[in-house]
Amino acid sequence: MAKQDRALLVRVGALHPHAFRHAFGTHATEAGVPVDVLQSYMGHATPATTALYNKAGVRRRQAEIGKLFRPSK
Image 1 (cartoon, helix red, strand yellow):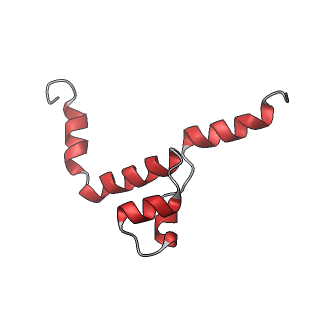
Image 2 (cartoon, one colour):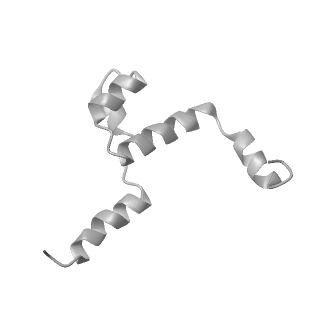
């Protein structure tokens, strides 16, 4: 990897391990994992903490808004 993209390797090395946890939570909510299941898996005391991961990503926002422009069946 170092030979392929040195800049990427430097950025990955600068990430805090908590960033990976946040990425997992965000991807799980985008994939449709229910909040109560994710809360249990991540060990959060309240659903409010888990809900912080439930921010719509760019792809999800585009897909949801795209539904407005699809022809009705």
